[in-house]
Length: 353
Image (cartoon, rainbow, N blue to C red; front, side, top):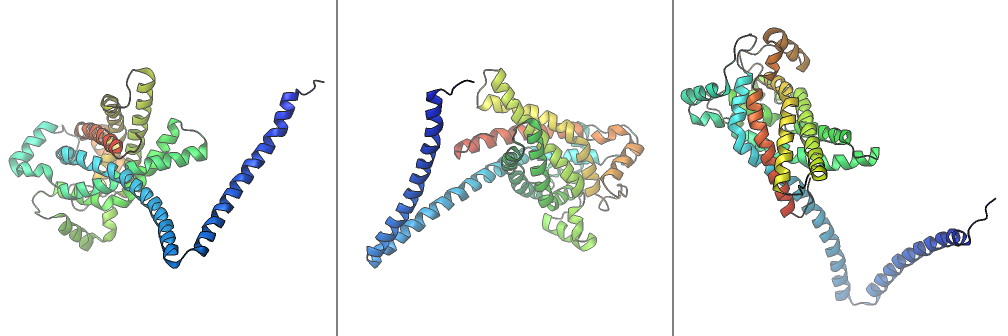
């Protein structure tokens, strides 16, 4: 039998002793601080007591202010980035919706992006490309801020629960944040889609919302919420997880560091992947949201029934109607969103995504 080394024996005895000493010192320091504060308060005049209490309240207020400002910067930077990107790419979103709604229930050659754009401008005017802009920007502030803002807290919770930070954790975190954000902001999406199709109604967002509620009930504002949540979950998880993983891979295998070039390449990859993943769900969501308001749409019971009807009457490729317009919109939007969000986070003193 080997005898214990004297050094190891002393270390085994000393470590618990040192730990207990440190613990006692912390307790004594805490108790001593409280006693000193109590003694000062007792022996001070009323004016000094007021001054001391105000100082203590000021420290607590500063702590809460720091936390509130962090939250504001965290969600605000995400919302501003998504809103700016939406403003630039909104015409492509209008064209995407028009492409998704053409030839409902028919198998026939589809009109291309360029042709439908020229037809819209000729018959409805250039302003038709900005139909539904108000609810789109409103949605971007709320949905964008929540979708990107909830990703990091969700990821930390998942990492803490699972004990890992692999790609599956990032996908789950993105899916959760996207689904929650869409469930809360679905009415703005319904308004946006309705206005994008009703070019001759001349109604604003508030008037359109009153019309929907009066004719179809309050629940109509949550039409298509299931596919919308599925689409947002797929979009956010594929977008953020791909962006996160692409950044890490590029930093590991290339000379790129945190900065514009890294963010540009990573966001371009994320935009491509998210378009391929979400195009079919986005088309189903649009069809459901436009039920009753559009005479050409069928009567769909839910998202699965809509997908079945579309594939059986229009063919499987119909699920990717408006796919090119969606990529033309989502690619630049993803790039602008991530580049601007990273810059705003840097200016706010927050760490990169």
